[in-house]
Image (tube, rainbow, N blue to C red; front, side, top):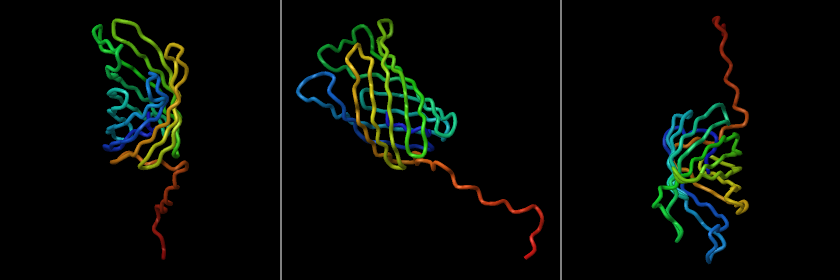
Length: 185
């Protein structure tokens, strides 16, 4: 996921990777998936586009400080010998809440996977992360794929551009307002 709760202010890029067990078997027991993302927003509403396990377009809406809703649509790649797009293009719809602030977050979300007009499946994800102005790190759990267990992932990304920095847990107080009457010196 690699998305802190604050929607982007301005435009920003993220470049990183995810390390996870290889769910496809094969020669390597782990997968290293590169991550590239672009986000643009006004601090309340963010549009984002990422490329990792397919191409994902999404939107994030800040509801309150440290609380956001995030949803997206992913077009996964046609990988492996069993990949068959003859009956339609597979899609993944995801949605969740991002809770946090002060440099950490927690995000539960659901994924609806399927081919329109065919069958659909449900998966769940729980991510916990830490972040600063130029970086984000995350541990995630993903499960619900037909009894295949839970996949653990470790992710990190470098954030470039005007993405928001981690807000202070307790903002500094505002300076005192001078009284409305003239001051004598």
